[in-house]
Image 1: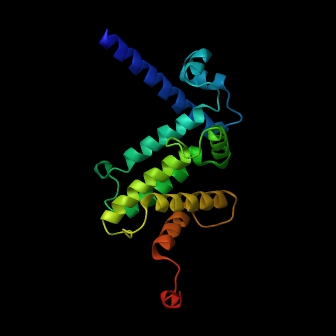
Image 2: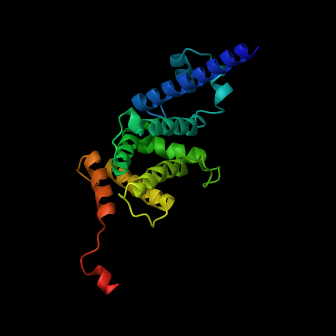
Image 3: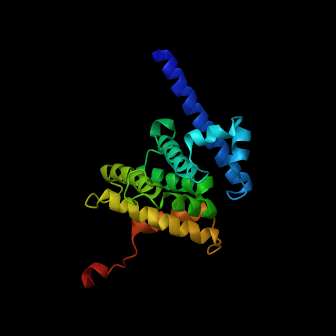
Length: 205
């Protein structure tokens, strides 16, 4: 019986992941608004009703996609999987990977945050908070490595990085910068780490 249940649960997980993978591909290739539930289920080779066994609406799949992609991002930041040994370099890698993700498309981002708006903003699974928490974990490691000051709250630093990241990302998509996006994000992090204070700031403050 346990084997039957485990096979059943495994099949359910596989079906759910297949639906998410197909939905993300269709959202990327033809746009969120142009994609229908029928197209998702047809491409995933499941009945339309199967979709609603996992997600109540098309919008409901977006938070699940964000959680899934963040889990994949977290796995991709492991040193044993080839990520840089420097925690700051991993933060830069994380920002560039998120920027390349189809969910970072401005239209999809707006739909994603609209889908999670009814939920409490400080819930751990809220996409914005989850990203800040992932960044905060890298900040803690950077503090241990001496790459970031140890007297700062890592979650606060994670929130600052996340806020600057989305501001730069949206500005880039709106054409406010001609710099390549990876270069723009790396420059943002370098400026944050170096600071903008001149040599006399501490004496005058």
